[in-house]
Length: 343
Image (cartoon, rainbow, N blue to C red):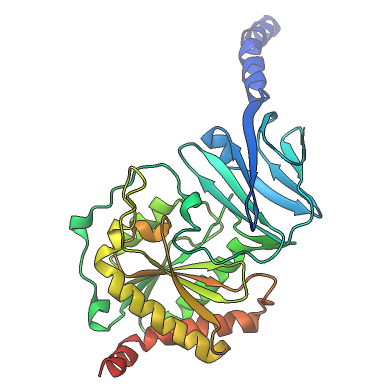
């Protein structure tokens, strides 16, 4: 009798088991399009958010691969290279390239891959426009608080290691930006903490984190300064500040959160630039503006620091310590140096 019940139980469960299995193996559609720009080739992969946000990119010679967690149904639009699907992997024969930068954007959910055959140009106000998503964000400008950096004192810092999780950032061979961003951030935190500065990281491990989540975690802490760490595509250190202006060409506001802190952010960028140049040589750093970045939503003095490209620096322990030491010294001497300069 028990065996009869077992058989009936299995028969009843079979439709559910096969239904679940069939659903898991059901192909998901991704749309791939590409466009050539003067300095890079841009590839955009669109699909459902759950599919795109877990995608991982890999480079093997002249081949670029994107790995997904589901079997793919491919749709291509104006793709100037050979492309094919092998199960859950999208393979693209893009030709030889030096480096690439990936971004996960929303509304619509898409993976944007910029491929550079040489060094990429510095992205200033105009060059960054294509990196914007379409989500309407309206920072609570009325809730912006005064910061002690206004008086030349830095007592607390939020350090934001760029990228993470399914977003690797730049990559060259087996070296990934997200790991370097996190390591540099942890080294900088340790150096500043020894001087009794309160330091917080937006991410502690290899995890995905959106721009809004990074901004919210920072604003809850109300730091005196926010510093986002990234790896660049050129030989220089590039220090970005928010433009502090509203972009009227779009239906939403950006950089509103930085309007009150443009002076403080510029002063922070200037002293860090001075210490980097003092350690790495005159002209090693460049200060410029950027729109539609994490700075757009930060309600405190804030900058992004892009360290030199993976091809321009070895990123040994010694070089990483040298980078973070220069930034640390600038932060620790911010009050003294700005007071001396203003006299």
